[in-house]
Length: 316
Image (cartoon, rainbow, N blue to C red; front, side, top):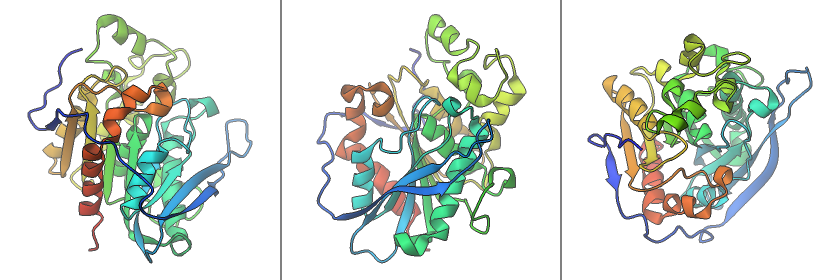
């Protein structure tokens, strides 16, 4: 694997510190909350649900919308429960949302629209879930990190706000992107030739989600791929970003977050990139590997994420 430039990043080398502990703060939970029902490719309704955790004893809390990974193939809202609980116990309402994937015949446009629909729904129901609608962030992992970044850089683009609660904004004040792609044609840049060829083969999940067309690869339709890239939409009005990547990620090239980090900083956006030395791809739900997930659930790493949220979702 080619090493990624870390000169503008914060490098963490001790990944064996204490793991996070949950259960110290009471949480109210709301499961299977229906937030949108878009129409699928066959014309059938596709209900989308979310699970919400809200800290007890707080009248209004900032909102963090969590977008799970799953390789553009799945999007289980029950994933990352320990991580979500830790953030909720730190004083945030955390909503884990479903979104459409290639398994549903969807593309990235649908996924972004689904996450934005969830944000609008939660703002419309802020009183019910004790949310401060002025303080909203989005946090995603892997494919979810990709969608979180797209949500952050497409604020105000009406083509992605479809469905209900259109009187509410889908803009966010902060983005956390953990090991998400940002430039799909370069998704495998850091890997060996055989792995690069596999990622750039026709009909991969990433190619299908980018909407390149049947039988095509990420290299066969540059304009479609560019339209699907978060890096395409970066401008100086974007919210602050926290980007996180493992230096030994074998699924998404570590340089993907570096490309986005560099583009954000070039426009003057507040961007912080954390590199976990030796850490692999941390999406436990997708990999099914507890060992790969452990560096991502240390107290040091999660406290950094929580501090970023506290800083950028502080009362105005």
